[in-house]
Length: 144
Ligand SMILES: [Zn+2]
Image (cartoon, rainbow, N blue to C red; front, side, top):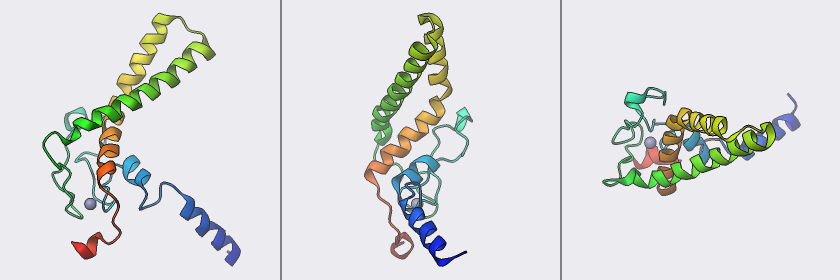
């Protein structure tokens, strides 16, 4: 590989919004916002509904407190509501304007999509919520 190619690859790695240190990395991988290594949820599969909301009290890697105060994740409901609204608008425009469905199958399809995506939406909302309050710290090991 030529040095120029390596340089270009390095530049694109830095542009990647999902790389380590970025909020999107923590949010979409459901990792601790501080170290981005520890898991935010005990079970990695959101469709195991019994363990959907089970989170460790602290990060197993950097010891960040995941339950910062009583009822901390109530705020995540607002995020969840926003995500649901975005999904509903996208589904509505797709089904109503492009496919031209009637209102009844349209609503059934919409409710099915929203219920089907609920576990993912739930975890995404919590990950976004904690990421609003905790920032990535590349030196977490030194401070620990
Ligand atoms: Zn951590």
